[in-house]
Image (tube, rainbow, N blue to C red; front, side, top):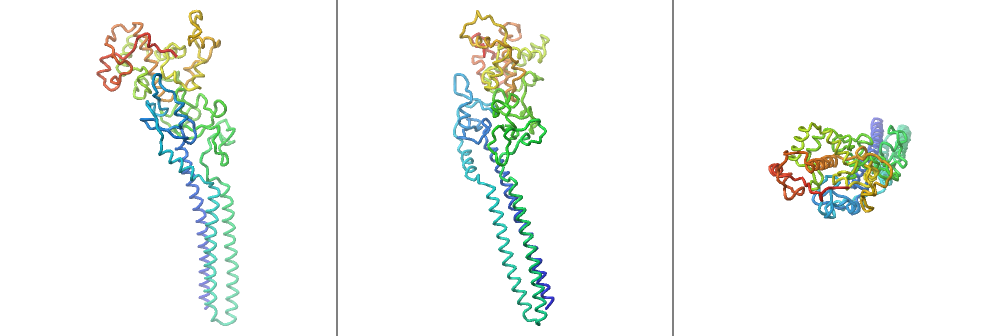
Length: 464
């Protein structure tokens, strides 16, 4: 009989130990589940963030035909080409003829907003439910074990029963104490875990911590309690936040966005985790290997604005070789034309407000004010009265915008050579009747080689 009682006591100990392990594992599982859920929600929120306003989409609109989506107000703020309502997508640089509501994205936003619960309360509910379930199960099994033990000892002699009851009472107290310790330990773990934020939807940037190696601390860091993201920008290439160092503490600085399309990039501010060339910002005066940049015609934003096709580039290459001019020297002349407002590629006219602010303080040649009326657009800049910075040394461009600027400026360079008669008999081709608006020059090499697509009429000369 004593062996039976000992076996029962052993079963009780094993049972309570098992319950203790189950309780701890269940609570740990609940917190892990909540943590994974918060990470998933943070990733979804980043996907639902507009690349222009850096906030959750408001009335999302898809550009047609590329289908890149932005807020309605952001789409309305996109510059349109002169003479039509066509826009340029800030992401893919393709022409967008119209836009339409993106109902799929709107449905995701509605679902996201409806499920954005208070996750701290949710975690507490999960924890309390887990502990309560374990407590109820342990109490029920403890009562069953006690009844079974009492039934097995009821037929024994009085002194043996008294000894067994005393032994059982001691074990019950020991088991209760052990379980109380486990419950207390779980309660302590629950209190500690509740302090840790599992509901973060915006991750702090590298400068949010007061102890960081960026030499800057965010005035309004992203924390568990502060999730509005004020004073931060979301990089369009790695989806990482960085502090907004521009006007008002909530706008990008000159080295944090493209001066032409406004896309946010963190590579120059701090090294971007996306190492591709497309994720970088390029200062115009620092662009080298011009022959490679000018030939990437597939990355040009709007080709009909006036750009060189591959046939025109080949002729320009022949002229430079004959004249002993390098691509680097020719690019320097193109930048002088841009800085002094002698010729500007059409993309320069559609710069962001920050880019225009830099450009409007450019260094200008001295004009004779007697030859210019007050209505002349150059007269406004003549009245600045001070030399400003050189735009080419300060303006930044993303990869596609940089390709567009390089090719567009060389279009003006090649055009001026033809107008001044400096290329001789190098190009005696007939002109294409469609000029820069000809689509065949980009897809049919024989057409591009046979006809010239450079518009040399004086009335087409472009000024900013």
